Image 1: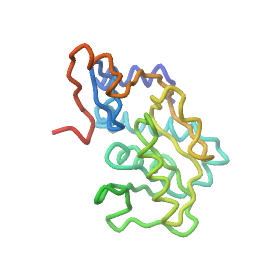
Image 2: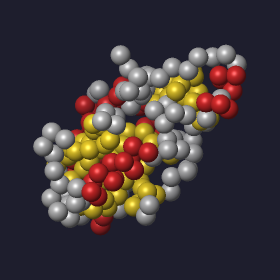
Image 3: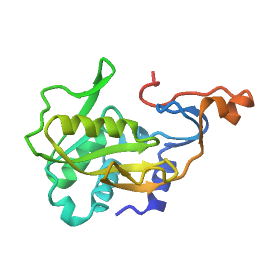
Image 4: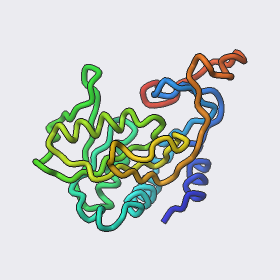
Length: 197
């Protein structure tokens, strides 16, 4: 099972721990970026990460989960691999007209017990949107997990839903107006899935 040091080493090995000046999907700026897709492109690494995420959820709670849901794009593979580790179905939410929704014929059974997953959380905005979609679709979110919580401990849970990130990795972030890297004249780049070409 991956421990936190091994997870960081995996990100470094796969070239997924980047340093520079980045514009995050949350709108914040940072000097560190975690490109999970570079880890998840290796099926054996994706499986290791998901197995460790699932193992970090208390057994009694884990045994109740009947589906895994994650927001596209970053959590598509994460949801799939966590679903495989749990032996349950997995699907994803995606944006349509700016709103997160279930598409592609995905639907929850009434009262379905769901694990919501993410690759990286900073503010938790996409995760909250995904939780709202699950709840509006008749599901009950039992737990939330992420590969890495980079929020500097700012997300203890999601409105009472327990949160089990595999790793809490405090990373410095700034609002654009207060970014020292911008002040120094360094341009911000957006390497995430919403900014990749």
